Length: 142
Image (cartoon, rainbow, N blue to C red):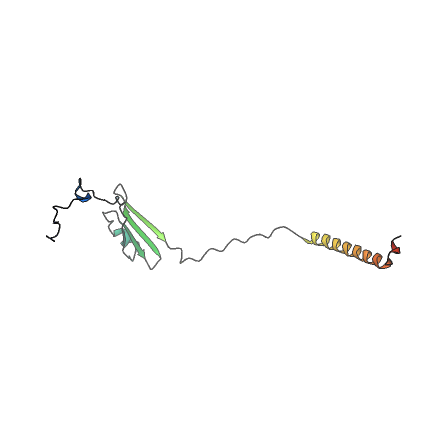
C-alpha cells in the first residue's frame, strides 16, 4: 500500500538519515583565483591611464604595433604595480659564440702509429719467410 512520498505504511522512515543531526559535506575552501583582464592599448600613455582593477585582477595590455606587453595590478598595500615586457619572439636569436678549436695536433701520434704498423708488417713478413723455409714433416724439427 503506497501512501505518498516520504510516508511509509510502517510509520515515518527509520534509518541512518534520521539518526542524529544531518552532516554536510562541505568542499575544502578554494584559494582565490587570480583573474586576468585583457585590454589592447595603442601607446604607453594609454596603458598608464587604464585604471587598476580594485579586485586585484591583473590587467594585461598588449601593444601589438611595437610588441610590448604592459601589466597593471594592485599589490597587497593597494599600490599600483605597473610592468612593461618585450616579446622575445620578434627579435632574432643571438649568434652563438664561436668555439675555439682545441690546440691538439695528432700528426705526431699518427706518425708513431704508422711506424708501429710498419714494424709489425716487417715482423710478419719475417715470420712468413722463416715458415716457408722450414721443411714440413716429422723429421724436420730435429
